[in-house]
Length: 87
Image 1 (tube, rainbow, N blue to C red):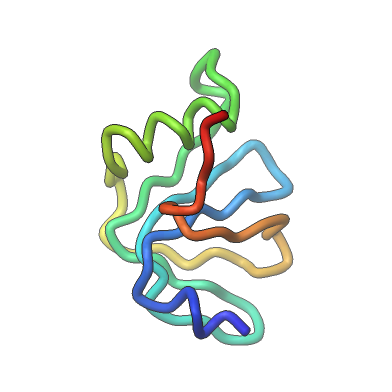
Image 2: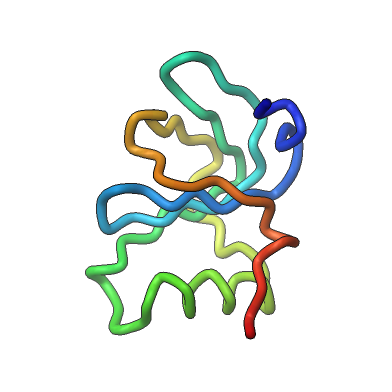
């Protein structure tokens, strides 16, 4: 099911205060691998998760990691960056 997201820019909403954006390059039963990723801790800004993601759609992913592994059990939602709506 995740195959349709491979090699695409994605947004991962985590159960914590983090939101992750980047290109999904691999996954297994436990981890998702993102490359050229932005791992953003929402405690660091006054913006909401939705506003941060919408800004990233408009201005591009602000890469702060070349490669990152994200635990799948921390994932709440996964979507293609291009499918984020700002309405």
